[in-house]
Length: 328
Ligand SMILES: [Zn+2]
Image (cartoon, rainbow, N blue to C red; front, side, top):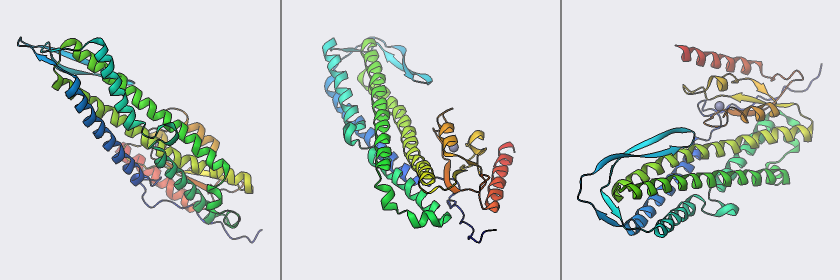
């Protein structure tokens, strides 16, 4: 029998629909992305007004379609009036134009470059927020942790700095991918339009729609990057604190339990896994995309259960209720 006080409970976020509490941060990055795509559209319009020149043809137009490929999503067909316009552009001018399109995309989507990309601030902030989250949680649960850890110290460790730097590398590569994919997509549309005599106005309208498709992919990736950084920080501190202080820690899974939540994500709501298990789970089946689940660093009993049985029961009840609503 020991006389030690019972450890405090892990902190369960108040907004149940947003276990990572990242709605505001994600939204802020969305606004930034929207502004960037708006600026791209404005710059492309100026470019096309200047360079997509030729003359209208009097003859009757023929309906045709322009095919746009969407990567792993279904391809899109756009109905156009073909044969209505004759462009007076040489192959070299077309190559020049496509080069200018790439510069515009890169200027806005790769702003800051690989060393200082505009998106890094958002990722770094989530990393810090995740570390604060882990620190706060482990502090209320473990007096040993609380007495031996400061946030300042966590944020200044080389391990922390390395993790952030490595998150930057993959963030840059994500945005490079978005910019490259958009360039290939727009180049196909432009070349197709010129080849088939689709007038500049219709061409511009398809380009605008294609940029909207690119933007929605960009937002998905941004959400994945931000929440991914927050999770990673929580996982790392859970692991590192176990190494440092010999604590028995795990991750308590909280699902957003939305109507759109995957069964396989809701399944884990209220259950505890090791950091290793959670990492492996996120690495497969596209689990990391569109995921709003959070993992709370949690102090465990020797048998791997959490101290607060009431909490386990309450979360199990929430999971069952969600399942009932699902099948209703
Ligand atoms: Zn999830």
